[in-house]
Image 1 (cartoon, rainbow, N blue to C red):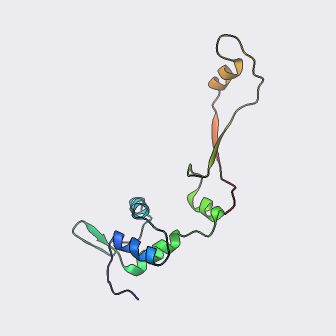
Image 2 (cartoon, one colour; image 1 turned 90 degrees about the horizontal axis):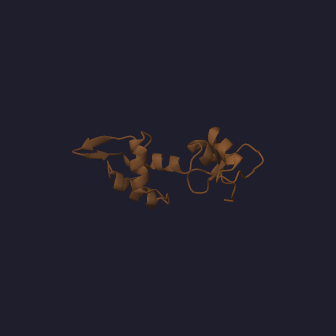
Image 3 (cartoon, one colour; image 1 turned 90 degrees about the vertical axis):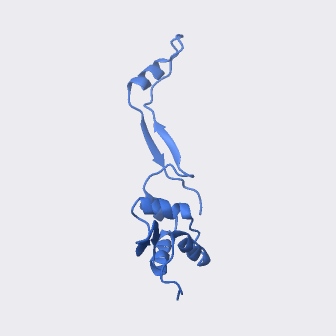
Length: 123
């Protein structure tokens, strides 16, 4: 299938791109640092080497079928498309005239709970 026994990360990215997988070297580097990158086949000096088949397996595994599968795989995040909201206790807002409303003072004394709402756009 492939004429090379080993590939570097850059060669593996090119191999994946040639197969139509939009993988970048930055993604491979990050995944490798997080321990979820392709399995290394060896090392030559400071360069890690990978089998082409293992690199394509990793790259194919990175392809997710749809947004809900991506959300399950990645968990909540602040990636593009996510909407961040803050749950604020409902209370009437009355200005005290001192530059701070009673609501602002009560909000400062209570913990605000941030939450991430997944983007519900169409794919």
